[in-house]
Length: 166
Figure 1 (cartoon, rainbow, N blue to C red):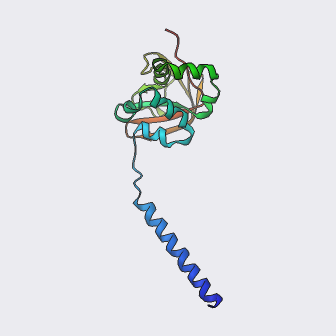
Figure 2: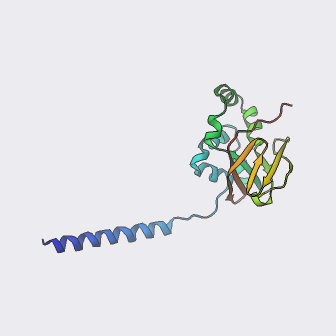
Figure 3: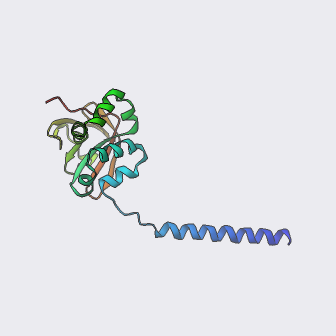
């Protein structure tokens, strides 16, 4: 075989591989998914996804809503003392109370946030504020806004919020 023949075969193989990958990419549906699936598919929310399942909230985030979820990132959970996380893991009701404190009924895009209090699914109020494009919830700041889902929207936040003691 000459060098030209080897080069031509290599080019054909590369072209075939490129076409195959393009076709495979087109066959994969990438439509909108629900809140639970969006959280599960977002690498920076893997801790939250695990805790949502432990608290028994997956089905609610799949079929309920619309909801606005202020989702703590993995880094936010790392900042929570280990003893607190351990206590939450042992008490599903307490875990559920903390997680639902991050959820507000309705779909609120970051641009629509008003400086006000909002009632969470937990029943307690959170303080929402916006200055320009900067959005906060209580002591947390929105890191990534407007992750759309079929039944609401997710804003990732840099803090795990603890509900007020009842």
